[in-house]
Image (cartoon, rainbow, N blue to C red; front, side, top):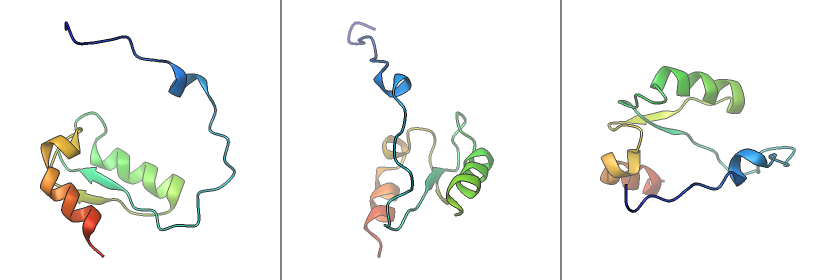
Length: 78
């Protein structure tokens, strides 16, 4: 608690103003043990909004902390 600071509301107060996703490959990486955003929810959102299936690796909500090697391997693969 002594190191926590109030969060800015900028992300929640401003609108996303782009008309389309950039013309670059888009992937979704999900943690199979995410209890905050369960994998089934992430799959549905990825399908509905991006038209793709997420890739799933072991880990939870803070995936880069729970499985840094898995995330790095995923990002570096061709």
